Every structure is written in C-alpha cells, then in structure tokens.
Length: 317
Ligand code: FAD
Image (cartoon, rainbow, N blue to C red):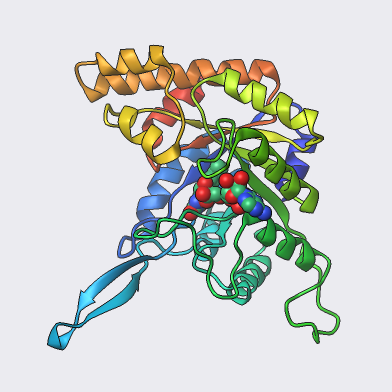
C-alpha cells in the first residue's frame, strides 16, 4: 500500500520504524530478530535506510595504492522485499543520489516496482567519507529534487530510454526529507524551505523530518512550510538518546540542538542505563505532545535497537 493512502485513511496517528540493513557478512536473521519485536505494534511501514559505499586505499604490489569502493551494508531492494514477504507489511525504500548514475537508479526502481515496493524516500545522501562536498556521479543526480523528478517520470511511464514503447507507469509514493533546524549546507533556513517546496512542487507526496528534540522547532517548521504553500503531510522523526556520547555526536553529525534541560540531565547521569531512561522519558513526552498536536504519523529512528522503542511505544499508544 502507498504511505500517502494510509495517512489519508487513518483517523489516528500510526507508527513507522526506520531500520538499518545488517552489516555485510551478517545474516538477515539479526534484522528479523529486531523486527520480530517491533511487529507487535503492527506498523504499516518499515523504512529501510541506504548506505553508500565508502572508498578506501588498498596497497598493491610495488607500493601503489588503489582506490577501492567498499560496501558495508547491502542495498535496500532485497531487504524491503524480504520484510514485505515475511511480515506482510509494507516497506519504504530509501534511495539516494550519491554513488548512482541515473540509469542505475532506474534499474533499482524497476526492481522495487517488480517486487511490489510502492514507497520511496528520495534523498540526496551525504558526501562520501573523505569527500568535503557532495559529488554526484557522472550522469548522476546532484539533488534529491532530480531523483523526485525521475520517479515522477516513471510514474508517467517515462523512462530514460526514450525509444521505449508502451512502458508501464510505476505507481510510487514519494517521500522527501525536511529539516526543522535547517540542512547544514543550506545558506539559510528560508532558502532550505524554498528548496523543500521545490521538491514538493516536483511531486513529493509527504515529508519526513530530520530528528529534533524540541517540539517547538517542529511546530514552527510546519507553520513555515504551510505559509509558503507546502500542504503535504509532514511526519516528525523521533530519535532516542541512549548513551552519553550521543550528546556530543548527534549535534556534530546531524547538526541539530539538544535542549539544555535534556543535555544537563544526561551530562550529570552516572551511567548509560540512566541516560537511556532519561532519553526514553524525553521521547515519550515528545511523542505525546506531537500526537496531541495532530501529527499523521510518528517516525522512530530505531538504530536497530528495539528495547527503548518498545518502552516508548507502550507508554505513548
Ligand atoms: P536535498 O534536498 O538535495 O538538499 C541538500 C542541500 O542542498 C540542502 O542544503 C538544500 O537546501 C540544498 N539544495 C537543494 N536543492 C538545491 C538546488 N537546486 N540548488 C542549490 N542547493 C540546493 N542519507 C543516506 O545516505 N541514507 C539514508 O537512508 C538516509 N535517510 C534519511 C532519512 C531522513 C528522514 C532524513 C531526514 C535524512 C536521511 N538521510 C539519509 C540523510 C540525507 O541524505 C542528508 O541529510 C543529505 O545531506 C541531504 O539529503 P536531502 O535529500 O535532504 O537533499
């Protein structure tokens, strides 16, 4: 089913979980053991993240170094399909521009369509490790909007091969990312909003936000989106802090603020068990307030760690 149809039909907010593919060399059973726990809440969707290859330099004979692409996690196509078949639930495939040519993207989308995966979160992706700035592939997309346009074209039966006759129309539901605290590369908050509006005008059906810990930032973001004519659902992304290191790593990696009250409580905690309890309580309060506000769905970044999520969902829903 398409995510936007579930949102439109649903009278109460639903739960969506985001999971990471297992590391290469690990069995999918590890992922299934996480999902077996989360499935007790009957989420209509499981989001599967995509992780681009990293480049490493390997020494060859004669002291020459060769740049080699190393893929640490498998792609989303197989995992989305495996989840759908095992749990009879829908999945959302994260597709990124980074590391892909347009043709490779088309091939991945065709595979997803064949397998019945109807939902795509269309993203640009971050710069590859070792890169200062995002570099598209030769004949790849530079921004998420270009990926949105490619998917919209396929939904109209327009593929890259212009000579294709009677090509079928895919029927993908398209999500895009939004940033209540601004994307870190954007010149300013307003320009970031305008680029978000462009993704929506290009055909996105819904937005999922970057994690935030202060609901006021989400409320303002929604108001600002509505003010410039973004009228599609805006799904809040919730992440739970589970260890002390995250009060330093989250702002650095995701370029978001941790509210001072939360920061101080975690900073003064004696161990990570206490930190996790504080983090869960914060997510519970955040979730309750967001539901009261009327959000269509709560998107939990599980980081493949189901225990805190179970605790939160039991208290919230
Ligand atoms: P874009 O919308 O392309 O925006 C990127 C930047 O460019 C922004 O600063 C924007 O303001 C600016 N911009 C946009 N269009 C233009 C233009 N035409 N000209 C100039 N500037 C422009 N990453 C992964 O690798 N895998 C994942 O699975 C993944 N899942 C995610 C899920 C969610 C819910 C979110 C919020 C993020 C996720 N990311 C993932 C991270 C995401 O790929 C990065 O945040 C990335 O840096 C930006 O992606 P985007 O799709 O928002 O990019």
